[in-house]
Image 1 (tube, rainbow, N blue to C red):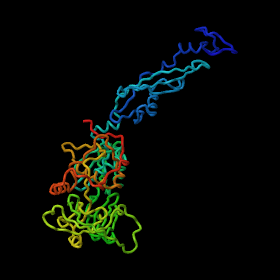
Image 2: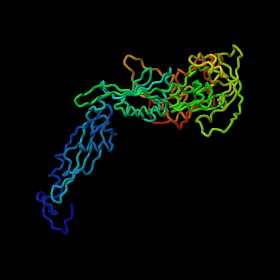
Image 3: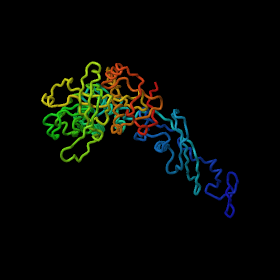
Image 4: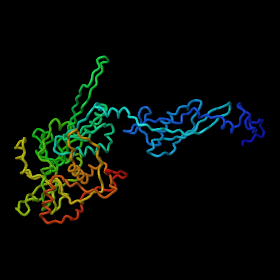
Length: 511
C-alpha cells in the first residue's frame, strides 16, 4: 500500500482505504476491479495464410518465420480496439503446438481512466490461422499460370550440361521466381510470372554457358475499349553444343583469326567462352561468345567415342616457346605438361602388338601401367568436314583423361530441382549424366566452386551403375586380366575434401 504520510488523504468511496484524492475518488485496487479497458479489444482474430507458399496476408502477402518480428507486426495490426485511447505497451508470443493452426499473443495495454489515473492491463489474443490461396498461387493453378517462359536447349545427345546448370541454379538461388519447371528430351522449360523475371534468368544462363538468345511473343487477348493487350513471351536459349573433352574442328578462316590454330583441338573448359588447347603444343585459345556464334565450330568426337588405352611409357618433353611469351594466363594450363606417351589399345591386348607414340598434354598425370581414355581418329567417321584439314593432322590419337580406380561409394551428394514432365511423356533418366558430372567434380577443383555438395548423414551413397562412356570396356578388360573386384583404389584418385562439403540437409526421400 502506498504511503500517504505528509499528503492530504481521503477515504476510497468503495473500500474506505485512505488514498490520495483523484477524480474518480477510488483507489488503484478498486479501479482495477471495477473498470476494464480491454472490453473493446478483440480476443479472437482470423489470420489468413497461403497453404502453398506459407505466406501471410499483410497485405501484401509476406513470408514470415514462426514467432518472428514480422509475424508479430502482422498480428498486432489485425487486433481491433487498440488505438489512440488504448495504447499498446508490450506484446509477446505464447507457445502453441506447431500444427494447432493457432497463434497466441499476450498484449499489455494502458488507458487513462481519469485525470491523472492511468490503468494498465494484460490479455491474451488468439489468432486462428485460416488457409487462403494468394494471388500468385491462384494463378499457378489456372491454364494461364505464366506470362513468360525461358526454354533452354542444347543439340547434343547427353544431359551433362543441364545437370551442371541445375547445380549452378541451386547455388545462386536463380530459381526463386520460377513458377514451374518442365523437363523434356530437348531441354528444360522454366515458367515465370513476368517477362522481367524470365529475362533475368536468361541472362544468368548466358553468364555461365555460351548462349544465343531469341525472343518471341504471342497475343493472348485484346481489349479494344481500353486498348490493352495481353501477351505471352518466350525466350529461347540455345546453348553451345561444344562440351568439355570434345575434339573440335577449327575451319581454315577461323584458324587465321586464332593466330594459326591447329585444325583439330581439344576443348578443356566451357564457361562464358570456349577454351581450346592443342595437346601436341600446349597452345591455348579462348573463343569469346560473340566470335563463336559468328563462326561456329563443329565437333568431331564426343565422349561416347572414347576408347581405353594402356600407358606403356612416358617421356617428358621440354617445351620451348618461340618469340615473346604470352602475357595472359589461360586458366587450367598450369596443370598441363607435354610428354611423349607410348600407348596401346586395351582391346588389342593379347591379340596384336600395335603400339603408338603420342604427344599429349597429360604428361604430369600419366604413369606406365595406368589407363587413359582417348580418341582414335582412325576409327571415327567424319562427315561434313573438309578432308584436307584431317590429312594435315599428324597425330591420330588424342589422349583426354586418366582413368582412376575409385572407391565404390561417395560420402557426399547433390541436390536436385523438382521437375515435371508433359502429359503422356516418360520421365527423363539422367543417372549416367549425373554420375559423369560427379566424376568431373571430383577431378576439377574449379568446377566445384559453383556447386553445393552436401555431406551424407547416413551410409555412403554408392555411385551410379550407369557409367560414362568406356565403362563396359573397362569392365571387360578387368575381367579378362583376372583382376579382383575388391582391388584397392589408386593413391592419387581424386576426392572431394570434407572442408568443401555442407552439412545440415537431409536429401533422403520419406518413401
